[in-house]
Length: 82
Image (cartoon, rainbow, N blue to C red; front, side, top):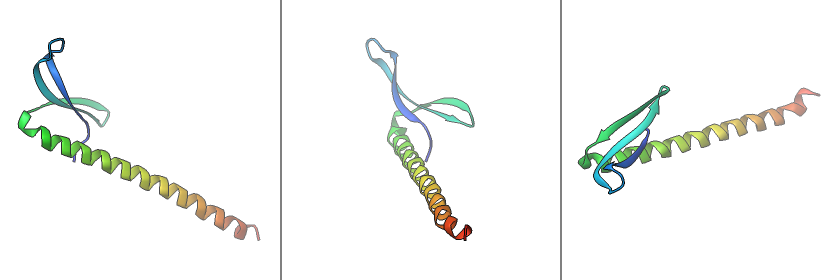
């Protein structure tokens, strides 16, 4: 699992010549770019997709935690004012 985006770059973009792969990501407020060998592209793609799924699930979990907290406070309010 790793953050980032895997992209295909070209040494000569106009003619799409000299293709190579790179992964770009930001970690601890530092942007990084690393070259990826062709035989590692499939694995790096799998790792970045897994990381994106993990991040979506964590965001959902946080949203549900906030919702749970709000609902818990709403239910407790009428009891507190008795």
